[in-house]
Every structure is written in C-alpha cells, then in structure tokens.
Length: 122
Length: 326
Image 1 (tube, rainbow over the protein chains, first blue to last red):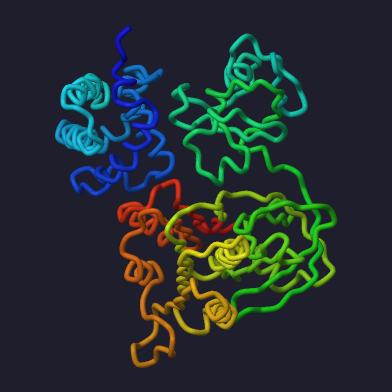
Image 2 (cartoon, one colour):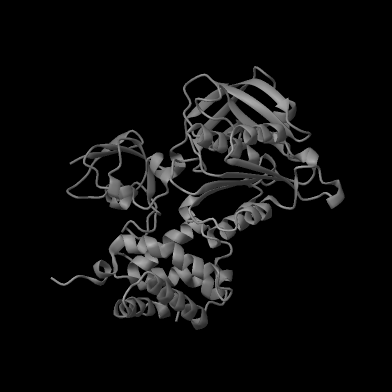
C-alpha cells in the first residue's frame, strides 16, 4: 500500500516542527499580523496545528462550514485573497525549510487552496 | 473496557471509544473541535489514574505534569477519573493568616497556613473569596522550602478585596480559598536558560519559580527583570541581590521606568523590564520564559519572545488582569 501524504511528510512530528516556524512567519508579516493581534497565542497555535495537520493530509474533521464560521469575523474585518495568498506563501516556505520535497509541498498547497472560498466566505 | 469517572459517576467505555466520545454519549458537555488530537479544545485533567502517553503528546510539560490530556485521543486501559479544566478546582480550603507585613507602600505580604495538606507548584495562583467576590493571587512561596504560603497583595485603588486584605484582615483570621491553579511554574528541562520578567507584584510568582528552579539544581543562566516606576515601588531588591551573590548563574535587573537618568540609583536599569530583558538576551531559542504582571507587558513580551525564538510551549505567561470595578 502506498504511503499517504501525511506519512510521507513525516506525520505528527513534522506538524509539530512546522507549527512554531509557520506561526512565527505569520506573526512577523505585517500584511496579516493584524488579524492575530488580539488572540490567545496558545489557542491560536493549536488551531494552526489543526490547520497544518489538515493540509499535510493528516486526520481532521473540519468541514467547509467550520472554515466559514471560524473565519467569518475576520472576513468582516477585511480578510481577502491577498491575505490568503500571504498565508499560502508562509505555508510553502515553512515546508521548504523543513526539507519537504516540492511535489509534496504542491499536494499540501492544493489542500490548503481548496479551503480558500470557505475561509474567505465566498 | 475501562471506566471514565466524572463528578463522582462512572461511565463504561464502549469498544475503542475515546474519553471524549464516552462523555458526550452520556450527555456531558465537553468542548471539542478537531477530534484528532490537534486543537486541544477538549483538554481535560486526570484526577485519578494516568492518561495514556499518546493523549498528552504536544501538551506543555507543565500541563503533562498536572495530568492534562486530550480527551479525543485518550483511550485508557485503566480507569480514569477526570475533570473539566473549569471545574477541577472547586475544593475550598481554609487558610489562617499567620503573618502580615508591608513590602513597600502598596504591596502587602501575607503568609498563610493551611489546615489540611495543600499541594501546589511555585508560581501557581489561588483564588481568595470575600463573600461573592473572588480574586486571584499568585503564590510567592516554594513548597518544601517555605513553611507557609506567601502572597503579595497589591493595593488597587478602589479595589474591594485588595483593600480589605491590606486594611482589615488580621493575623489569626481565616481566608477561604480555592486552587492551586495555573501553568506558570518551573519544570525540569535541558533548555539554555530561564528568563523571568515581571512588573509590580508580578514578582511574586517569579520569586517562587526562580527559587524553585535553583532548589532543583538548575544551573543554566537565570535572568530576572523586575520593573516598577520608581525605586520605592520595587521590593525584594536585597533578597534578589542576595540570590545573585549565592548563585553565580543568576542575574537580576531592577528596572525603573519613571526616573530621570541622573536620579537612577546604582545597580538599577532605566526602562521597561521587557526591553532590558531583550537587550540582555536578544535570542530566546531554547529558553524558558516566565512573564507576570501588567497584561499589556505580558502579552507584548510573549509575542516578542516567540518571535525571537522561544517556543510557545516554553513561554509561561500570567497576565494580572484587574477585576472590573464593582
């Protein structure tokens, strides 16, 4: 049986390694850091982990509806495609930094991209 | 199948059911979200029994040592008595005030004795009850080192509980408390150093944490930055300097934000304690960071500590949020 994307990337250990790297990039980016200024950082990191688990093909129970509800308040504050693109950039850079091969980064990016309309409430 | 005990009632787990699913099936409302062990929304605490290792993956070391686990990925072989984090601390203790003395014009030190055994970690906090009012105070004492519990009470202008404690409560009186709570305490680690930053009575938990770490043989650098506006707002300056003299890995920076440069007392730093801390230690990768006191300082410093390399799991923040005026 062929390995799943999640297994190929390295499973939970890889996700754990990615969380701090990814979140640090997001917070340091003035284009999007404003959306994270009032949040509890520990809760946010846990959400980032759930997100990274999902895009790396790992176990998750998120639905499009969850994504819509979870981001509706940010959409009201002006969350748009440019912000989503910035997050996609950081996702790619994080996986690259961890040495994930390009084809697997492409697969992860495709999963992340599939949430775009729900996240942006389109 | 093993049982899950919650609030005195016992629930049989079905097949390979998680603790979360078992409780939900029995109509106990446990918050949850991802159900894959990632989001930590369903974190609970084991009161009796040991959560299986996988159910604690990725929690902070401090949380693991308190028996926290993720209910959605917890399938224990043995029976487990569990509590939601919100209701794990309902037991009320009676504490006798055995000593009271002012550390400066606005901060009172209370030393308390508990009539029953009271287990805590240095740096945790307790809730004090005055009728319906509840206020949280951090413990400055270290278990096994200090015989009594120690609190530093800052007098808040107009504050009902702090003024009551400062003016009315006398030696011999009894206080009703619950706790201990909080995850801001030292845990053994191979990190590169320990940074403690506090303002005002935020020194209380740090005073406990630093002495606890030293007592457990911590030999990496420890930096303590305590901030106040003016010299007379600081306290425990001599005690901390004493600690520096007896432990070569400890450095201490009393920081003043509201004095003219010419008036700065010898051995003190001008500025906010978080700024002084980052000047001393620009990178915090592999450091443990403890932040207590003014919520704005705590939250800004937490963010900055993370951005300069500290792992979120190693940042322990305890913002002292003031109660809204009643």
